[in-house]
Image 1 (cartoon, rainbow, N blue to C red):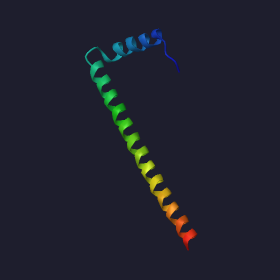
Image 2: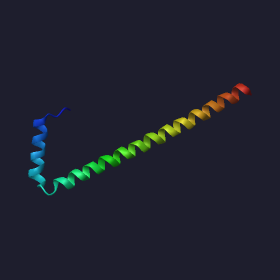
Image 3: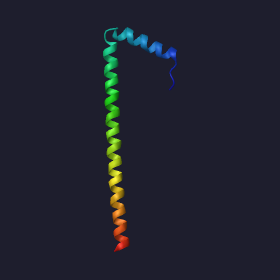
Length: 70
């Protein structure tokens, strides 16, 4: 979904007409904060998943070592 300059300009004009000039900065700030929180949450989920996979790998390695030794 590539947006060109014309499409972005139309979207901004429509948003300006609907919300007015005083609300646009507030809406932009809220959208930015929401996106930032979403990215932060996704990073945490990915880090947690990596931690779980790392611990599982260590446990699997220990079990295989026990089988080889025992």
